Length: 67
Image (cartoon, rainbow, N blue to C red; front, side):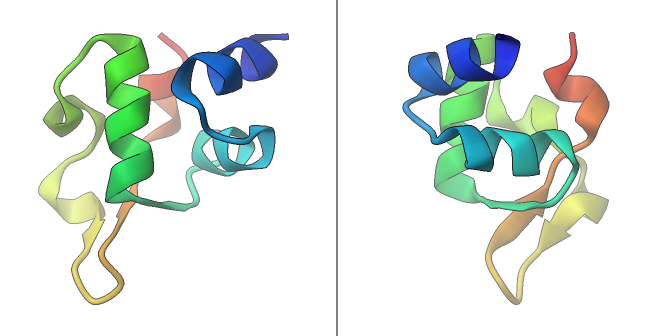
């Protein structure tokens, strides 16, 4: 239920939300949508160690989504 609600609010697909929850890579755009729904700055969702500059993706810590 939480995943579906989060998907609707963020305009991201359920599979995308599930990948983010698992800590898999996500685009900066997707992370911006997640941050918007959570009401936090995007920088709160990751640390410098979680940025993959080569692929322009961010690996989010699962704990950030489960607040």
